[in-house]
Amino acid sequence: IEPAKFDELMASIKASGVGKSYFIYKYKNYDLGLPRSESKTGNSHKDFAVSYINDPSLASHRRDFTVNAMMMNIFNGEILDFHGGKKDLESKMLRHIDSEKFKEDPLRVLRGVQFSARLGFSIANETLELMKTLDLAHLSKDRINTELIKFFRAKELEKGAFYLFALSLFEQIFGVQIHKNDEFLRELKSARNFVDDERLFLYMLFGKFELDAKKILEKMRLPKSYFSILKEPFFKAMPSDNELLKIALNMPLKSWLGAYNKERIERAKELGVYERKFEPKIDVREILAAGFKNEMIAAEIKRAQELEISSYLSERKFRKS
Image 1 (spheres, helix red, strand yellow):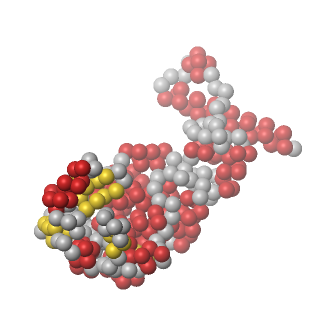
Image 2 (spheres, rainbow, N blue to C red; image 1 turned 90 degrees about the vertical axis):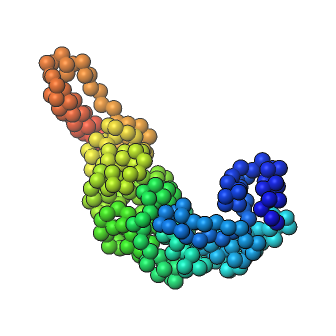
Image 3 (cartoon, rainbow, N blue to C red; image 1 turned 45 degrees about the vertical axis):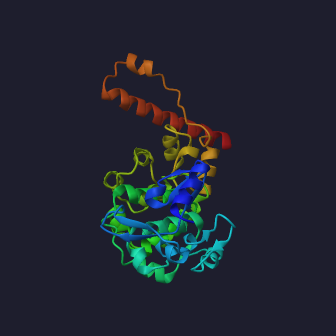
């Protein structure tokens, strides 16, 4: 089909896109496009010359992985698979197609990482070795963050983290040198079963390796929502009842990122602070009437909260005995 006829067809179904520039249209949840080739003309991800070619096999070489290179003929539904994509899809394997084309955009390294975490795919050894040769230095923060956020939201965080270690990407992305840590991977895998929050990976990374979270977040220029991690207390070991209740002053523990294992969740439920905050009976008016001023007010409120926590725990202990 010629580009002019394709444009006509897309207009008839009210598809939107940049057809004349890139031969791609968006229709509902689908991207519809013509076979095309790309040749790199500069360092930016926009520095590509795009041209139409009436040869799907040649056009497939511009794709990143075999599973993404399969095509469908929109007229008869025929699946075109020139690189064994179906086999790799069945075996959940990410394998690159053309080494030279793959190297033209280093962002494909991070695409591989987030695909592995979202879909549970493994990366073929030869593709992993190729990825190790690529430098992410010329990629913009926005492009990097787009892929990272997809990873942060993924189900299998430990799989993506495994490849971040394998590709030595922690220094390039987070500015810190971290060596592969199997315990961290195991904890990530377990934690995801209890906490479905896109901040979980960074929360555990910062806490486990005692990193400067604020500095890293500012350097990465992630959305502001990620900075709320700074307000989430982290404990490597099981927190005490006193510590759990202090956290619960600000939130029910079901909302705390640290409630990432069965032991912590069960204890929070036993303390009655999993579904609701701990709300001590403190009358601020009495504190003001007692003459406390400025920073002394906050100090007195904190002291009163600690007394309430101690009293609450003592009562529970007395009831049990």
